[in-house]
Length: 244
Image (cartoon, rainbow, N blue to C red):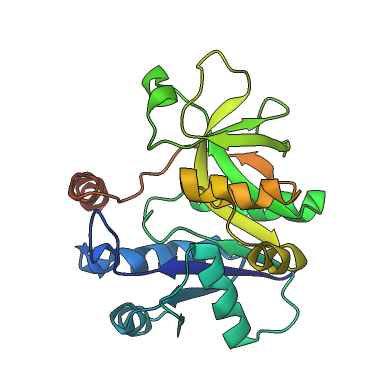
């Protein structure tokens, strides 16, 4: 099966404007993510952006990029436009990778892709175990509840996503914001209007569930840190510079 990874990226982040172009070890965050995606070796990688500056940076660093509209409500809507523009034939799966997680584990990317192929799934994502009970009530941490307990081999179905949950809830995990779509499912997803709960909770995956799209979850090795604030950036910068 043929997989394409598309990374949506834009400069207009509310909490940390311009974050895709912030540099760590001389390379922008978006280009770090691009190179991690390439390292997974599951298919071609493309950045979808509304900003010429991001487009230029990715191209300069040896990546592929496409310019999209600035009117998209979600990253998935943006990747679908990019897909329409590039017209690569015979794509079976499209993976939507977050552009602000340069520490994403390459094995987790590979695992999600392989699970999608093995189980012939329509839509898949990742989740990690919750080690700190404080995270259950942290609204910035998205939780996912699954029908079965997650392990290294299974790919159970999602029951729901939420931002707060009881820590006694069974089979509740820390959601990792990566999505993999079967092509027809992606086309269906973007054809649906944003649902009230999607808008209320700022969780685009609720649009899928509310339109009867089944989502499966693979267990991630760990939860990579997303860069949402200046503090996040400083923390990740220290980790990545220490590794060199």
